Amino acid sequence: LTAVLLLLQVLYKVYISFVEAGAENVQTADYFKGVASFLIVSIGGTLVGLVFAVILGFITRFTKKVRIIEPLFVFLLVYLAYLTAELFSLSAILS
Image 1 (tube, one colour):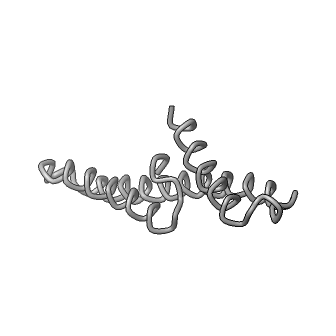
Image 2 (cartoon, helix red, strand yellow):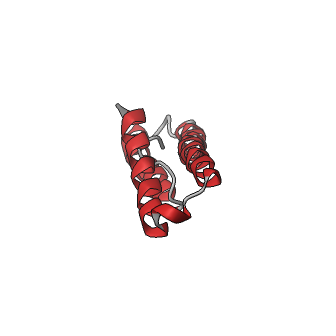
Image 3 (cartoon, one colour):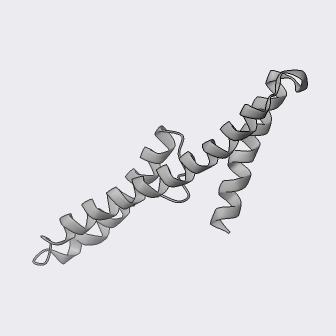
C-alpha cells in the first residue's frame, strides 16, 4: 500500500509537470526524468528514515534508567523524520 501511494504521488507530480509544459514540448528524456524522480523520492525517503532510526537507536541506548522518556523520543524522532522528508520533497510515507 505504501509503494502504491508513493507511486501515485510521484506520477501525479510528473503528469502535472507534463501538462504545464504542454504536450508538444514533452520529450523522451522527460519520461526518463520521471522514472529517476520516482527512484530519488523513494530511496531518499527511505534513507531519511534509516538515519533517524539509527539516531533513535543510539539515543534509547542511554535511557535504560529513565524509561518514562523513551516514548517521547520515539514519537519525536519519527515526526522529525517525517518533517525532514517533507522538507526535501522526499517520500515522508517511507521515512
